[in-house]
Length: 115
Image (cartoon, rainbow, N blue to C red; front, side, top):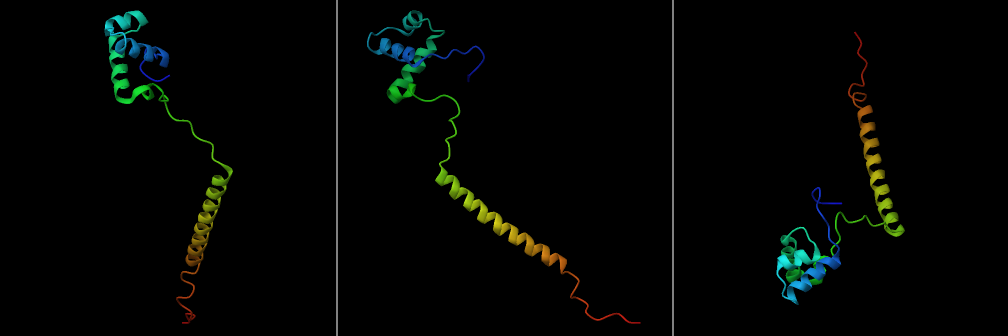
């Protein structure tokens, strides 16, 4: 549960009822708070403001971090093929560099030092 310790989360139905009571019945925030047994009048004010801005969609928003969607087989296959191609290129580059390191100094001096 998100929020501060002791914070109460109200269901969508309670929020909609509070908004309805405010707009349709003309009740004050204090009366709504008492009637619905809410902790503070500020909640009603926030809900009415959200309702004015976004309508009913304000109360349909999901809380917390969105769930990770499962990857389809086709997209996973494409991702793995791309990853495989990238790793092959990297491996080829590393092998080329390793061969270049091994050959350093071998062809510099071909004559034997004789004294």
